[in-house]
Image 1 (cartoon, rainbow, N blue to C red):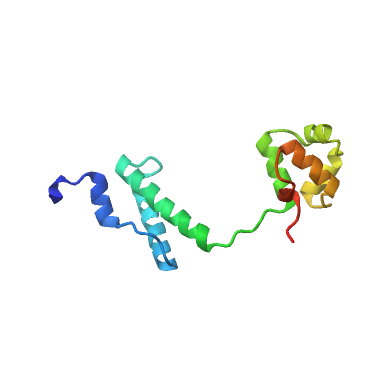
Image 2: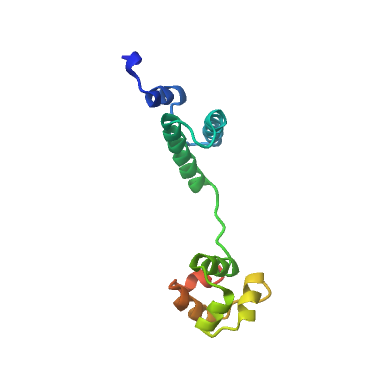
Length: 136
């Protein structure tokens, strides 16, 4: 029966992927992914690629549960929204009635977003206003 294993089955027997529950298992999974990528480069054979995907999913799940995430600042959120919508600060300024200098100063951290401007920006970007408010 072992002679009939697919390449993927053989890799599963070698690497034995399991849910990651601690730092030691996390390091081991990272080592396995690095080893596979080191052996095969950015375009591994199908079986190795599937194992890399499985291990990466397990790693991502563990990291999501254990590594604390910092909420982006309103300035970082605004900058991301502008980049995501692929618009300029000038276009946002014209559409919202907020001076371009104000938008630039918010993104650079020189000033905070006023509540009035939060409402305008939230409407323009179709997001909940709370994403543009500071924590707390």
